[in-house]
Structure formats: structure tokens, C-alpha cells
Amino acid sequence: MFKALLLDQVDNVTRVSIEDIDDIQLASGNVVVDIDYSSLNYKDGLAITGKGKIIRNFPMVPGIDFSGRVAESSDSRFKTGDSVVLTGWGVGETHWGGMAEKACVNADWLVPLPDNLDAKKTMMIGTAGLTAMLCVDVLIEAGVAPEQGEILVTGASGGVGSVAVTLLAQLGYQVVVLSGRSEENRALLTRLGASRIIDRSAFEEPAKPLEKQCWAGAVDTVGSHVLAKLLAQMQYGGAVSACGLAGGFDLPTTVMPFILRGVKLLGVDSVMCPIQKRQKAWTRLSELLPDSFYQQACREIELKDVPAYAEAITQGKVTGRVVIKL
Ligand code: NDP
Image (cartoon, rainbow, N blue to C red; front, side, top):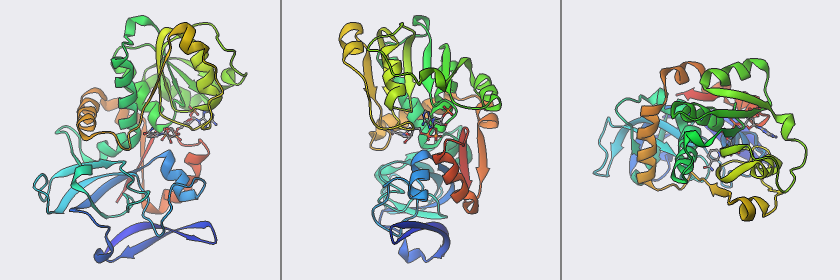
């Protein structure tokens, strides 16, 4: 038997409970993992509260990522005791996920932990951190260099945003953040490496087709009119990596930034990202994130606390990363 957070749906309402589940009910796969930590992401919040149509087959164990140790494997790449991490691939959406003491998954989805990361630190990074690393790498590949000017990070207090701020600062970029948060959270963003903070209200007025050129690059986790505004403010030849929709999935923009300033809008997806790219990103994360990130931007909760935190993350009230101890 193992403990799991279970989601069910009754009359279109999502119900959450903690259940003891028999091992024979584990999902299909060739590796069984004893899970040490999962993490709470925006998408988990939408799934658990039922605010987003993330899950279509119930009952479902949520949790789009986890870290732990291999318990059984019929795949030659993994043996009992190996430390592994899993993010994405529809786990916690279509396949039972990480908010449980055990999971059974496909070996192709697992990444061995880099030597200098343990299970807890790995989930402090989690899907959000992996996505932030991919966003930063996309900017670097597009030729955005520290001497070209400031980089804007939107949704900066969130999971993806806070890791992106930390990584960019570590790599020597001047990081400006857009945030709607209180002074306390702003102090955290400064400690993580932000050189300047812009209040979200400054981006409320609809974007003109082109505005004053401010940013050499940007990481956007918000979408909608915030992404439209920052596109209008990009420097000539600048690049934006877009990964999120915390403010909405629309994009009320024009072609002007693209055809008159050569701005590049680069989409980032971590869910189906190829395995080699993931391995490289995990290694870079393990090398780049300073100890201060793990001390300042993360908190640990238990399964019983998840519903309240899920509600909070969908309301934009969670700062940094939240890990769940199994
Ligand atoms: P969080 O909820 O942790 O962070 C989102 C942040 O966005 C909030 O902290 C807040 O920051 C800001 N925000 C929230 N609501 C609004 C709003 N209405 N308008 C403007 N800003 C807002 O989420 P995550 O960091 O986990 O994820 C961020 C986004 O990235 C989500 O949309 C998520 O689905 C997406 N994502 C995409 C992935 C991919 O593979 N493409 C993978 C992981 C996440 P502040 O208060 O500082 O402004």
C-alpha cells in the first residue's frame, strides 16, 4: 500500500482526498519509483482546484513532477536505488503523478540526478526551474548577451520567474522584474538578483504597436497584454522567451515589433522537451543555482497542505517554490 493525493470528479466538481492505494493499482510503466518529493506548480494548482481542464480521466494522482529512488526496474538504464527526476510527459495529467509515495512510469521519461543535487533540491527546482533554464538557454542561443542591456522577467515572484531571475543574475545579466507583489516579496526578488523592480500596474495600459526600446531580452511567464507590452518595448533585434499564461492565453499584439525591430518571440515547452536537452538543463541548473536560492526561495509542505496551497497558487499568492515531502 502507498499514500497518494487522489482527485476525483463528482457532478463536474473536483474532489481531493488522501487515500491508501494498493500497489497493484499503480499505473503501467517499466520503472517503479519511491518518491521523496514532488512540487507544486501553477498547472497542479489548476488541476487540483478544478479551475483548469488539466485532467480528463479520473481518478488521477496529480503532480507534474517528482524526485525519488528507483524501487524496481525492468529497463537496463536504471537499477534499484538510482536517484531520478521526472518532469512533464503528461504525468499528473494523463498518467498518475508525483503527489504519492510511489509512481510507475516509462524509463524514457526519467533523468538521473546530477551528482550535486539531492531529491529535495531537485524539486525546489522542479518543472518551474527546468522551464526557467530552458527560457534562459533560448535567449543565449538567440545571441542575447549581458552587455546588450537589461533583461525583463515577468511573473517574477512565481516558480518559473524566481528561478529565471536567479539564473540570469548568476550569468551576469542585469535583471529587471515585473511584479504585482508586496514589499516583502520584492525584497526576496532583490536578494535573488533583481537590479530593479517595476510594478505590474505599469503594464496595464494597452500596448502601442511600438514603444520606447527598453529590453535586450525577456522571459515571459504571463502572456496576454503583459507579453504584448513587452514585445512593443523590445530593443532592435531583441528576443523574448515565452513559456506561460498566468495572465491569460491571448496575445493582443501587432506585427510591428517583428517586422520593424526584428524582435524574436521564442516559445518554450518543458513538457515534451527531448531527453538530451533536459539532461543538459539539469546539469546546468545544478551548477548555476547558488545555495542562497535553496535557502530563500523555497518552502516545504505535506500532502494534507496541498489543497490550500493549490488554491493560493491559482490566485497568484504563492512566492517562489513549494515542495511536497512524501
Ligand atoms: P506561479 O503561479 O508560481 O507564478 C506566476 C506568477 O505570475 C505569479 O507569481 C505572479 O507574479 C504573476 N501573475 C499571476 N497572475 C497574474 C496576472 N493576472 N497578471 C500578471 N501577472 C500575474 O506559476 P509558475 O511560475 O509555476 O508558472 C508560470 C507560468 O508558466 C504558468 O502559466 C504555467 O502554466 C507556465 N508554465 C509553462 C511551462 C512550459 O513548459 N511552457 C512549464 C511550467 C510553467 P508577480 O506577483 O511577481 O507578478
